[in-house]
Length: 151
Image (tube, rainbow, N blue to C red; front, side, top):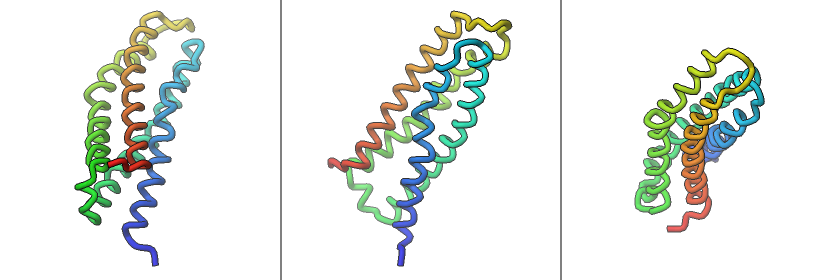
């Protein structure tokens, strides 16, 4: 018989694939736009992918904490505690860092007339993408900690 813990681990791994997989390509999707029409379309695709990231991320947090509650010894494992702290930090980056930097990009996409991508977009996007890259690095560290369980 399958235990509740194993079911939660399964959901946790499935959620990582569902949420983190698309999360790693969010920046790549919008870098492919060569004119404003393509760029706007890329951001629409990005928005749809972000829904998977949010659902997967929420399930990751819930199942990760549930595993700790079912197996309290996890809270004594350094890899688990650091992963949880890094995950919470990455979640905080969204509303505190990414959202304020994405609003001007969204406004520019809505207001700009013509097909040529303005230089202002590249300046704004460069800053946004730098923070998204940082967040992806945090997620890669978390994945490495989950796989290796080094301490």
